[in-house]
Image (tube, rainbow, N blue to C red; front, side):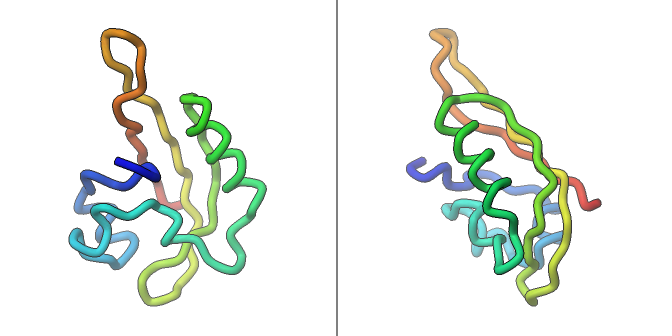
Length: 95
Protein backbone atom coordinates (compact mmCIF):
# COMPACT_ATOMS: atom_id res chain seq x y z
CA UNK A 1 0.00 0.00 0.00
CA UNK A 2 1.10 3.59 -0.42
CA UNK A 3 3.31 4.98 2.34
CA UNK A 4 4.24 1.46 3.52
CA UNK A 5 0.94 1.12 5.35
CA UNK A 6 0.52 -1.82 7.71
CA UNK A 7 -1.55 -4.65 6.19
CA UNK A 8 -1.26 -7.29 8.91
CA UNK A 9 -0.59 -6.99 12.63
CA UNK A 10 0.20 -9.52 15.35
CA UNK A 11 -1.45 -9.74 18.77
CA UNK A 12 1.94 -8.93 20.31
CA UNK A 13 2.13 -5.64 18.41
CA UNK A 14 -1.38 -4.75 19.59
CA UNK A 15 -0.44 -5.61 23.18
CA UNK A 16 2.84 -3.70 23.08
CA UNK A 17 1.45 -0.52 21.52
CA UNK A 18 -1.99 -0.41 23.14
CA UNK A 19 -3.68 0.24 19.79
CA UNK A 20 -6.31 -2.19 18.52
CA UNK A 21 -6.01 -3.79 15.11
CA UNK A 22 -8.51 -1.41 13.48
CA UNK A 23 -6.48 1.59 14.65
CA UNK A 24 -3.28 0.11 13.16
CA UNK A 25 -4.17 -1.42 9.78
CA UNK A 26 -3.76 1.04 6.92
CA UNK A 27 -1.41 3.35 8.82
CA UNK A 28 2.34 3.81 8.56
CA UNK A 29 4.26 2.96 11.74
CA UNK A 30 5.18 6.64 12.08
CA UNK A 31 2.11 7.05 14.28
CA UNK A 32 4.16 5.44 17.08
CA UNK A 33 6.83 8.15 16.93
CA UNK A 34 6.87 11.03 19.35
CA UNK A 35 8.88 13.99 20.58
CA UNK A 36 11.97 12.01 21.60
CA UNK A 37 12.09 9.60 18.67
CA UNK A 38 15.54 10.04 17.08
CA UNK A 39 15.17 11.64 13.63
CA UNK A 40 18.46 10.02 12.57
CA UNK A 41 17.01 6.56 13.16
CA UNK A 42 13.84 7.47 11.31
CA UNK A 43 15.88 8.74 8.36
CA UNK A 44 17.93 5.51 8.21
CA UNK A 45 14.69 3.51 8.15
CA UNK A 46 13.25 5.75 5.41
CA UNK A 47 16.43 5.46 3.33
CA UNK A 48 16.46 1.65 3.62
CA UNK A 49 12.78 1.35 2.65
CA UNK A 50 13.23 3.68 -0.31
CA UNK A 51 16.20 1.58 -1.48
CA UNK A 52 14.44 -1.75 -0.86
CA UNK A 53 16.99 -2.79 1.78
CA UNK A 54 16.70 -4.43 5.18
CA UNK A 55 17.28 -2.35 8.27
CA UNK A 56 17.46 -2.76 12.01
CA UNK A 57 17.20 0.12 14.48
CA UNK A 58 16.65 0.67 18.18
CA UNK A 59 13.82 3.15 18.23
CA UNK A 60 11.97 5.08 20.91
CA UNK A 61 8.24 4.82 20.21
CA UNK A 62 5.13 5.70 22.16
CA UNK A 63 2.17 3.59 23.23
CA UNK A 64 -1.40 4.72 22.79
CA UNK A 65 -1.40 6.08 26.37
CA UNK A 66 1.74 8.15 25.63
CA UNK A 67 4.15 5.88 27.53
CA UNK A 68 7.51 5.72 25.73
CA UNK A 69 9.14 2.37 25.01
CA UNK A 70 12.30 1.27 23.23
CA UNK A 71 12.03 -1.40 20.59
CA UNK A 72 14.45 -3.21 18.34
CA UNK A 73 12.84 -2.83 14.92
CA UNK A 74 13.84 -5.05 12.00
CA UNK A 75 12.39 -4.60 8.53
CA UNK A 76 13.06 -6.97 5.64
CA UNK A 77 11.88 -6.61 2.02
CA UNK A 78 9.97 -9.54 0.51
CA UNK A 79 10.51 -9.83 -3.24
CA UNK A 80 8.62 -11.56 -6.03
CA UNK A 81 10.16 -13.89 -8.63
CA UNK A 82 11.25 -10.86 -10.68
CA UNK A 83 13.06 -9.33 -7.70
CA UNK A 84 10.55 -6.55 -7.11
CA UNK A 85 9.66 -5.65 -3.53
CA UNK A 86 6.09 -6.81 -2.82
CA UNK A 87 5.99 -6.22 0.91
CA UNK A 88 8.16 -5.33 3.82
CA UNK A 89 7.90 -7.54 6.88
CA UNK A 90 8.71 -5.84 10.14
CA UNK A 91 9.10 -7.05 13.67
CA UNK A 92 9.80 -5.28 16.89
CA UNK A 93 11.04 -6.53 20.22
CA UNK A 94 10.73 -4.55 23.44
CA UNK A 95 14.14 -3.67 24.83
